[in-house]
Length: 136
Image (cartoon, rainbow, N blue to C red; front, top):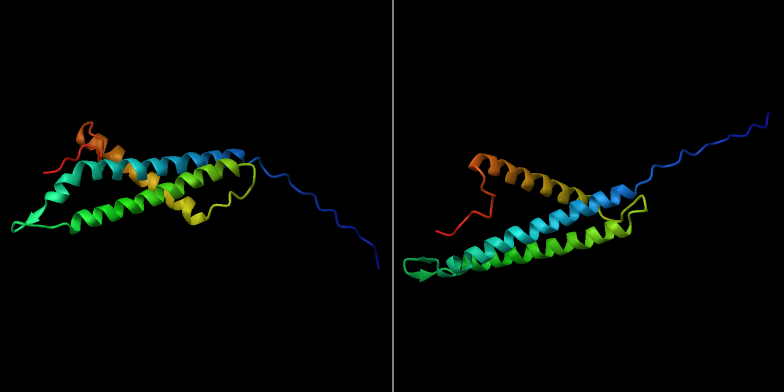
């Protein structure tokens, strides 16, 4: 029998501080999207939703549905604000402590909505999507 020693060299990991900052920017942008667009739409359409009538009878269901969806977006925005702070706080760790679903949902939301807004800007000749909508 021979005595052999196994020497294992560890490869130093790359510095991941930038990863936390990048995710914090993505989360802050997602929170800004979830706060600004629904707030603008609720403020713009609230009077119209409350005056909506079918056959002379007011229909408050749409206003209640929009209010419910607005509250949901406020909760989502609060989650992403907390995730942004956590990403900054945990930026030195390899794991940010934020679930992958939250990370990728925020990233995909940003990509889709910003992509739609850029498309709308070029397609409509300079209008910013969601913010040019007015009630009938």
